[in-house]
Length: 304
Image (tube, rainbow, N blue to C red; front, side, top):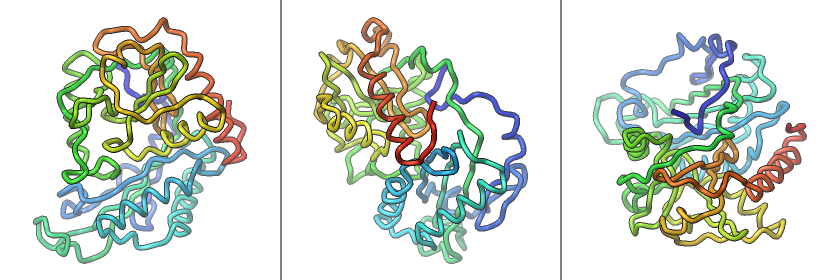
């Protein structure tokens, strides 16, 4: 099985140091309390970011999403974005990391005084954890991901808005399990009206007759890479549409690909056992080249 987060093995990750509320601890010793609201309830927000030549790609975009999400659920970050950057820099330096690094930044409402739901039971301030790994996407991903349409859907905003990058990921975990049980790598999730939406881990695009289509955005993850792809298409004259479309259009697409911070653009080989196109991916490859240029402009890095 292949996933969109498959990375090349790197032995250096066995001894990484993890940031936990200002302290740097070996991965075997980095822990949070069983009373932590993130462990107990999934009450928290997170960001995934990549480091290129010492600079976090699209840092402000990630921080906009992170701080907006925290504000929306009344989660006190405890520091401003300069403080977050300082913590990221401290962690990267402690690990000797400079490029080809993936970070998972996690913030929870903190340790609770009793093992119950109410947010006011978290009284000692937030818990901030930063995990960084030496990470390059696995080369097998170039062959493409196999998707299976799953019964688990992306829900309505008033149930749990998919725009939150929250610790509460059970909806996506169930979709991932359903895809695995169907013999696929990842689950293709529909929205509440039956239109194609996202996968359990990434945003989803198709290419039909030279046009790039993705969902309306009403029920999908508020993806930074998704937004960059749409922005680049518009700037470069590639027709791009945020619209409702069904599996009918997805099955008949010439190309399909996923977007996410880790894999950038990952090709889709098949959906529900149906091959997508003839294996040629000229539009995705053009977008991939444009995205690498955008990362290079943002970070000053030389992107292979």
